[in-house]
Image 1 (cartoon, rainbow, N blue to C red):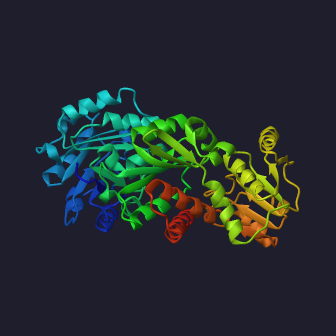
Image 2: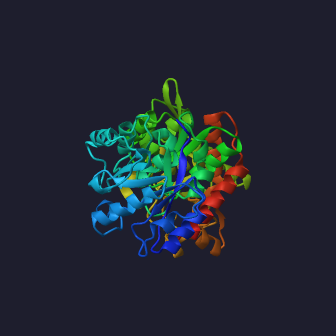
Image 3: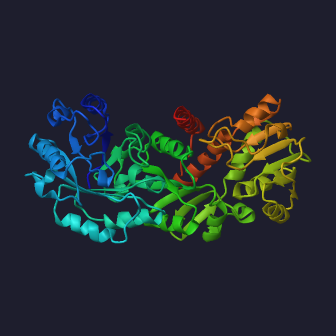
Length: 480
């Protein structure tokens, strides 16, 4: 299978906008979306182009902006084909008797489902293939991660095709088209889950992917804030390794492991809310993960999945770097999930007197009793030596939120495990109140380097990962 190409989608209301976008494209092909153009000029859209194009005039009944007659719409596509457009895209559901395309290799036969993944998807794909177009393109909207595997299986054939799973669940279909046998992946901002051409080329290295590319990933929900793909992909690129690291958005441990098996995933970073449920679903875990009953890393072996918890080492590293003595100190952990369990164990291992504070008192008491910690009231009393936030409150894009009210942030040191943004509202309030602060980026980089080495046998470089994370965070903040 040839290596996949990047298609940059260009939209606009005027021909001037279409031509500017076309000429500024940094992809392998350009999709010219003509369905929203007021002063439509097909010849002008194609004239002087420097890249191959796909001409699309999407009907409103399949998510497009063209509201004219079908005769008018098909005439636009026929004109583009006659003028030598490399490809024209027409819907499978359209009555195509009015479409004049003499060369079938020009035809992209497409089908979009914006509601879900149809139960008869495989039958629809077979019907599309029977027409022998140049490219079969299918885009569905998965409602669970398992739908992505359904799409991949339905598109498992050698004829040129494009398989797209829209939205958060389908990021792997866009970032790793080779895993679906897709000849193209689409870049832009006009469809759910689309990535930019720069992300596809620089972060995910799509042009270098093949069916042999090793797949790694991060699993949890939500993952839009995660810097892990930027970090691990930067490290893979720096070492010249044939691998890609992609998001697997799900809150279901069994579903995650099924998808990971289907795509032959080599290693997974596990984040909220899966750290405890994945532990229960994995046969082999190291002693630390077994004691905490939560893990953050999976690796595939010949015997199955094995799990480890690198969070403890990652959490303690910034404290050790500052020479902080925890023995006999009052430490408060905010939250009662998998990350909180890890933090409690880590702090207790250094002799701290640990309290757990969470909004759900019954959960707080259960975790505190199990780990031998103190169940604190909510909010916790001021005057701590160390406060560790393990909740997601304050994570991008909801960066103005804090797990505690401003007046309750009173203590010597605050450690927020959130890394995006690098300084959360909680940390800013703590700094303004005179407390020492530690952000989650230090921990993230530390444990990511350990994960990377466990998977690949080569040590991760903290400088490479930190630079990639900060670049990602900065770009995310500019989009707010």
